[in-house]
Image (cartoon, rainbow, N blue to C red; front, side):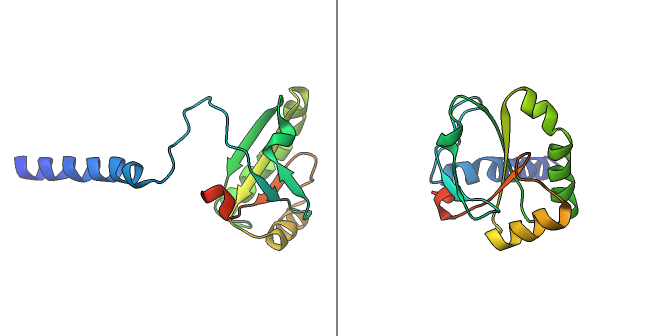
Length: 127
């Protein structure tokens, strides 16, 4: 029994800490400034984080366009857009999908640019 518990602890430690040790870039501390990036939006224009200096930015990442959870998340951000606007905050969603996929996603789901900017993640964010 003790062997099983020890093996379980070793597995937990490996799962939690090895990915962090192997990561090439350090994880930013909560509340620290995000590194600058420039990515294409669903409209094809470039959006840079530096364009929003001095404003609140809600930066969320999602795995894929057109999936139920991601669609719900985007709609929830849009439904609360007035609350974000009151606080002069901008919402930026980032996924690995390309600009064309984002354009179709936004058109199909009725996501408007002014409340929810969707950005295509490029290799630049993975550095």
